[in-house]
View (cartoon, rainbow over the protein chains, first blue to last red):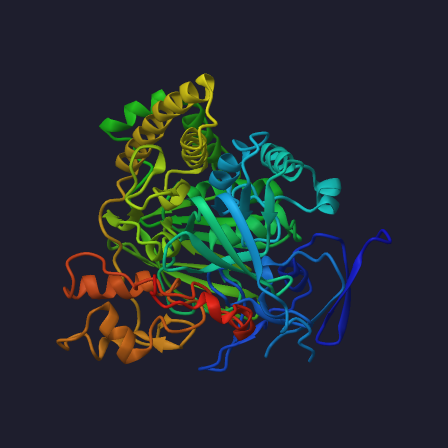
Length: 84
Length: 472
């Protein structure tokens, strides 16, 4: 991959990502499907709508906060925590 | 954990025209203001413009997999090169008391913006309608829109299988696109008795490009031997080792269907996103199973200076959305005394296009016979509200109470009080109530401020002077 790629650290696992790729698809491609722990039932959720309405793909991004991963395109190095 | 942006300052913006939403309608509206010297601000929730229809592949993916809806990219680039201020990754969450100010929050910079405007064009689009089924919360049970997005835009590995179900021509479109990407589409399961031509369908001949589009989708499905099953509804999904096991029950007396696939995508068409028009005080009315904004000529509403365009007005597809966006923008130019003889003529001509699109929507609706309400039938342990984990059993316990309206059930059971603010379960709960005879047709949750779950820092950025609480 070109030198313009970014690193995304997801729960201490490091991925090299091409610019503009959606964070959600990075996790999907790498089999990271347990994105958000449901606060009531405790089961793990994964995005359903892909457009920002279901809020099931929320992850914690360092320096930003809890964000819907389907709305984020990787344009800088990111540190992400999932499954919380 | 660091919170470096907590002390950021409120951004004050002033626009003659504020456009909310960067999909086809918002883009079409904004493009009318290029080279007009109006100060225009476009706020969009996504990282990049385009909405759902014109969502673009990243540069890197475009180099390897090619263009996707190039027309949209050209439109977006023209806007980026203009003087229009584009604010991405931001959503509107509140409106000020005088209805001439909106507050928006930027998810990337963690800044709150106070945007005052003369005119606002609301182009918030629509969302897919999903009815709960057992197991709809497990990973990889998604919507066709999401399927289209991950395989068509994000271009993930297509060597996977999917079952697409629900209702509407959108399913065919998604199925055809996925097949062309190389995805193994195992079946398309349609709820209504659709795809049979009726007497009114003869008028589809007036819309040759769309008829050909539809026939092309059918042809792609037919040549790839993808079965289209009609008259089935999703019953349950189960996570098994090799993917998802889905079961569909017949609406007649046929035996149920069972599939194994990597993904399951279900939706029953689209419903308009009306939170923003609602809190701005625009009239909302019922239109079959959808609720729509009541608009007048050129997308005007009863609120002075508020225009609603695109799928928030009526779910009629991207062509109609773009025309409505253009017309509203041209009318605003007229109101700002910046119209020319030519633009006034175009504005009138576009009204004819709106009539044409509405006629098409009517014919399509009659052809596909979508009128009968969706039947909501689930097992007791199916989650109605996935955020708050409320099962159908918990809801049905209260259905015979005097207070069990949609709002009453929300207060008692917490359905709709979770993170998605009722966007996923609102329609389901209203269907449950309608089926139980509580309300005549659909009653919905009210839109409330904030329109999105906010970090508290979004509010602490707003100085005290702006909290007037009704003092004029």
